Amino acid sequence: MSDSNHVVELLRGQFTGAHDVLERTMQDVTPEMAGWQPPGVANAIGAMYAHVATGEDALLNGLGRGAAPLLASTWAGKTGLSELPPMGGDWYAWGQGVVIDLAGVRAYAQAVYAQTDEYLASLTDADVGKEVDLSAIGFGRQPLVMLCSILISNVQWHTGEISCVKGLQGHKGYPF
Image (cartoon, rainbow, N blue to C red; front, side, top):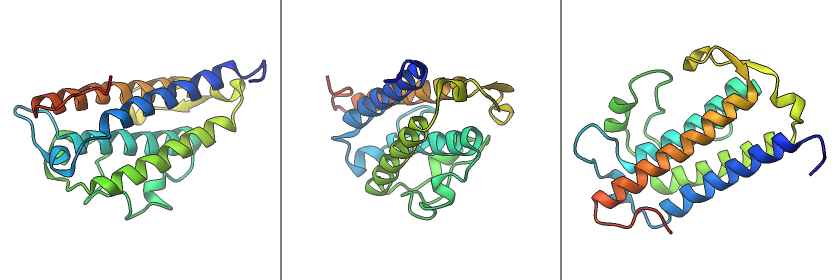
C-alpha cells in the first residue's frame, strides 16, 4: 500500500470484507430458499441479493465512475433477473414480481465485485475525494468516498436481512 492511498485501500478492504460475508451467508441458499417470500413486507432473499449487486453496479459504475453499468453493457440480459430493478422506484413491488435465476445472479455479482475492486484499485485518495452527484439517490453532491460508504453499508444491511430470512426458513443465517 502506498503512503498516499490509505483511504482507497481501506475502501477496497471494506468492500472485500462485506462481499465475503454476503457470499458466505449466501453459500447454502438454494433457489427455493432464495424465492421464498417472507411474511409481512420484506422481500425474498433472491431479490435482496440482486438489489445489492445491481445497486453497486449501477451506482458505482454509473454515478461514481460515469460509465455504463455492467447490467447495461457486458452483462445486459445475463444478470439472472427477469427484469431489472427500478431506479428510484418501488423496490418492494419489484421484489414481489422479479424471477431470479440464482446461479445467474451469483455470476453477475462476482463480476460486479471484480469491477468494483478494479475501479477502486485505479484510484488515488485524491480521486475518492472528488464530488459526484448523488441527487438521484437523495444525497446531493458528495465525495466519491461517501458513495462507497453507502454501498458498503448497503451490502452489510442486506446481508443481515438475508440472514434473518434464512432463519425464518429454519436455516442458519450468518455462516459464523
